[in-house]
Image (cartoon, rainbow, N blue to C red; front, side, top):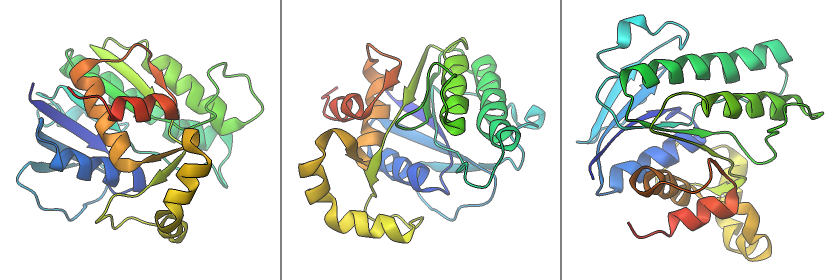
Length: 222
């Protein structure tokens, strides 16, 4: 099966790692980066679509049509944001983008990156976890061919990544020790990307994938 993928958030840590994994994977034939700002990356599989505002998608129907997967890696930290601001970016814009794709590509598999400790009940004490839980819950109601929510924790960057904060460089150096001590809490970004691709190719029994599920799917030979 040939996969044509839309990736959001390629200018961020997770998105860039997933992008690099997709570009090197033989079953991924085309990748469309949907970014708010230009990301300088050249590859024969790669195209870019600049959408400054995910709440205004009416002029992008043609560019967003013809894909069978979306890996939604865009996101922001909740630090310094109130609930209304964070919910607008994390929930409103994500659901608007996903809803548009569901209409344009009914055979699409949509994968959303939330994070460990996301609150499916929507009633917990942590604001960001409630918002991401609601985002996951409502994405699962959209009429996609498949919808999965990834909850990674600590991740090792891909070789060649440029969007790295200082502490990720430290993690890269000590990753073998971290994985030995906490195997259920860590993944490489290559594993995250491969797990996404395998969910498109093979599907998975659960719509919410914790770290152990992500690492299991990454090993699947399809």
